[in-house]
Image 1 (tube, helix red, strand yellow):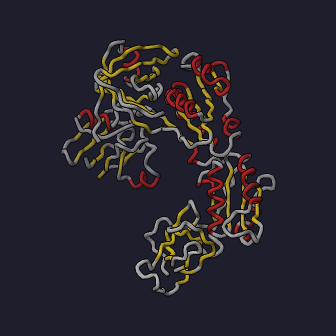
Image 2 (cartoon, one colour):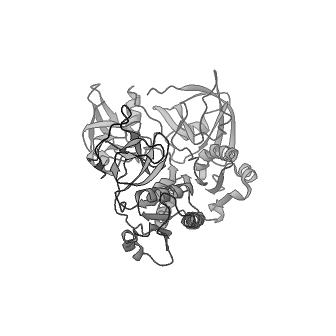
Image 3 (cartoon, one colour):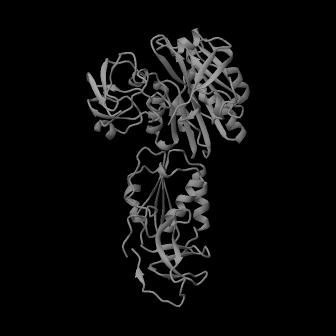
Length: 181
Length: 316
């Protein structure tokens, strides 16, 4: 499946770079994505940096309460000069980013590392169900059972790609599966 | 964009600081347009050699748009505008102003607003403060002035703001430690600076060195265009050639010839007066064009920028 360059909403990710002047260097990662941030963390002084790691085995799509609550406390005491670096799956990146924005940070302060997998979070535009780990299209919605075309349109609010029914005219029609890029 | 002017009458004049005079303006006919905090108007003044247009922040409450207030500091090296306002304007006189425009609006989503004013730079914040108070927004004002010259509205601000007002009278040796002010701030704090270029530069460089995100830093400087060498401007569309004098801006010279160029700030900030350059090197003095656009030389902001040599050819 080709990525359509005309789709502006799909995020482009670049490897994070350390902003040396930050008053607090804050790293947040899923347990299998730490290697993406480690070189940056090693450049920081111990006093000026903190690293929060999401525990493995959390239910997909829900930020573990412990991480979310801890991040909330760290951000509420953080200086305006904080820089946040995030690594993990794509949905996780945007969950952390959205939590940081609600704590007052702006996108300029937040760097999201390229997602560690191509698996997508999918948002069903019919029943609003969010599905995790979607790797091919079309995908059957776990909420309403419709067969969804996984589009490249990305909703930052949900950290998810948009899914729309692909066989509305003939729900019996089955379509060939494509692996998502 | 057409720039209509609004005739207004001077209702009251008050000396609000040794060098600052406040003018209350009222519409001669109908109502004045509503405005948002941080707005400014241009006052169009009949100067001796040419018409003078200066931008002044509205310093009254946006919830009460029936009257506008502007405050004008008498500049030692006035190009005519501030000395006209101080010397020639009396209660009852008519003036012409442009409708309000806003290039310095507060970001209402901010967690906290950190206002830093230098001298007559207090003016835009006089329209911010009533609105911030109505919204219940968290803010503090750091006000740097020289009591023998500026420091307008101090009593009023002290009464309204209490401990949210921090005063620094340089005449009494009170210095503002920008590093301390900028260090002790939480996420979502936006800083706004209005005052002399040195203050803006000081706050911006201190904030950047501390690691502030640039999108949280806002400033407004309405500096008069600096004089330069005289030059000739050739206009391809109208076929005219103008002489731009040393002490006038290219924009003023164009207006003198009856060539209307849209503009809002007359200070190299808003980008409205951008004019294509066909030939000739430009001495860029604006803050609007990017470094690349300046190097490319295809465009000039005639409100502040000039020819680097003896002549320019403009596509106008």
